[in-house]
Each structure stands twice: as C-alpha cells, then as structure tokens.
Length: 359
Image 1 (cartoon, rainbow, N blue to C red):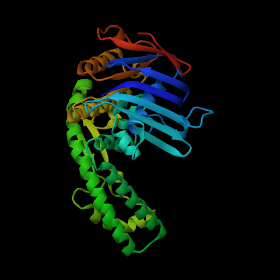
Image 2: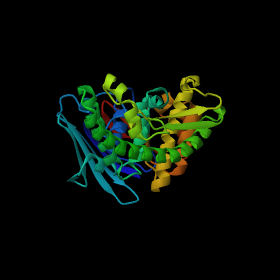
Image 3: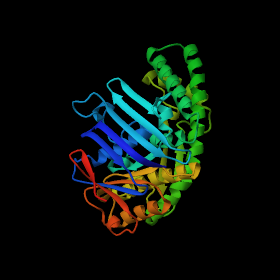
Image 4: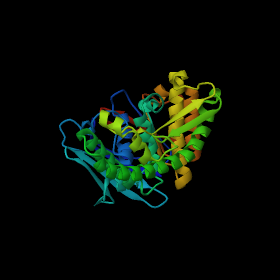
C-alpha cells in the first residue's frame, strides 16, 4: 500500500499543499513549526479520523478557515482508490472515489497508516485508554464486524451507566446487562484473538530493538475476571456500580502490558527504552497488518532524529527499506542514516506551511 498523491487544504498552518510521493522513503525536512508533522498528520487522519497529537479535532482547521480537507490517491493490491476527509464545525465528512462514504468507518478501511512520534511512548508509560485505541485499530482491520460490535457495546454501556446514576430498578438493569454482556464478550473475543497474533509479532520486534532486556512477556486483560461471564461480573458488582454511578467491569477496562526479564515493571525502563519499546509496538502492528493483508501499511516516523539515536535510526530505516514499505519521515535535517543509504530518498523541504521538492 502506498500514497501516490496527498493533498491538504487548511490543515494546521498549511493553506494548500499537493504532494506526489515516492514508493519508498519520503523525507520532509525543515525548521520547527514549518508544517512537517502536519503533512504526516494529514495522511494519518485518513487512517484514523483523529490526530496523533492532542487537542480537539476542530483545532486542526487552519485559523480563519471553515474546514480542512485531506485527499489522497492510494495504490493497493486490491486496486487503486481515492479517499477524502473533511472536518468543519458540524463534524466529519468522508468520500470514497468521489462518492460520499456510507460511513466514516467505510472510508477508514480503505487506507492504513501507523505512526511513531514523540507521544507514542504513552503506549508504555500512559494509561490504558491509549493501549485500547491502539489495539482496536488492529482489530478493526481484521474483524469486519468490529465497528458494529463496538458501537453496540458503547450504546449499552452508556444506557447502563445512565440507569445507574438515576437509581433505576434491578429489572431495568437486567435487560441492559444482557445486551452489554453479549456485545462486550464478543468484543473481548475479537481483541483477545488479535492480541494472540500481535504478541508474537511484538515479541519478535522487541528481540531486535531491546535484546539487552531479555525474555519478553506480554499479557492481555479483558476487563473482568476470566473465571466468570461478563453478565455474572456485572451482577456481582451492581451494588458497587450503583454507588459510584458507572460500570466498573467490562471491555472498557481492558488493557495489555509488556514485561521483560531485566525490567519486570515499566518503571524499570529508561526514557530511551520506553521509546524503543513503543517503536517496537508500532512496527509489530505494521508487520501483523502485512502478514494478514499481504501488503504493508504506510509507516510515518515523526521527528526521527530527536526520538532515536543514530544506531536505532539506521536499524529501523534499513528494516523498513528492505521490506518495501512506503515510509514518511520528518526531521529538522537529513538524518545521517539516510545520507549513508544507497536506497533513493525523495526529499522535500518544508517551511511556513509550503514545500518544495529537492530530490
């Protein structure tokens, strides 16, 4: 899978930009604040409908504009496709081959991109929400019914929480517990099946990027005891849930973790090791996508030089070059590992939200 063309309008500090991208490594260089990250972010939006940077979605819109637009022409094994995504004060609008998409989810299935950027270490040091979102992106691309199941679960969870806050009767809660348990257990089964495959890819990646930490152990927790059904767990904690006004057990509490023989707790990892661990997480997800779909997702590496030392920059770039993935890299200057490579690099200079091709 690769981007042939990426067009951005009114995204962050970019007024209008039209890029023709190369199959292999595409490097965007320029000073801080030039718009390099916004280019990677624009492509990422087509795969996630959310930024990898924090903040409300409407802050993506360029100041003074009413909406932003992202358009791409994509080459895939299943055939070429064009996708578009817009955001205004009223929400998202998505298109596939010039037609309105049936849903945002339908558009997101057309293109896949993973990203390693300064905030990715939150997969290791942050809360469970980030790890669930990360895992669910992978599940979404292998389970056709994931979106419908997740939507049904969120609806049932919202209704049950509302009833808990209102102090409604057990009879009313009983019916929503059944619906919540059905959707929740289906969702947990999908996640667990994906994680079994993902953990093998992750263990292999960690052996490459953090061999000094020894044997790796991964764990997935579904959000309630493995010994009981979700319906039983909801009934057991109903009194406690009433007192706090929300549902304490279920897939909304799911999490996964990594431990090493030489670093059994994440607090034992240095900042640099956290970054390498997060990088391995991202590349393992890309590898699993490639294994299941027969083609690599697009891989974005934001601010590469500041996130990884020279040796690990070379390792990741060499690895991705050899597998044939399209790579989007941003950096203040050309990284040493790319200067030394024989593989051609498409080089762009970005400044004040505009761009010119150098190679």
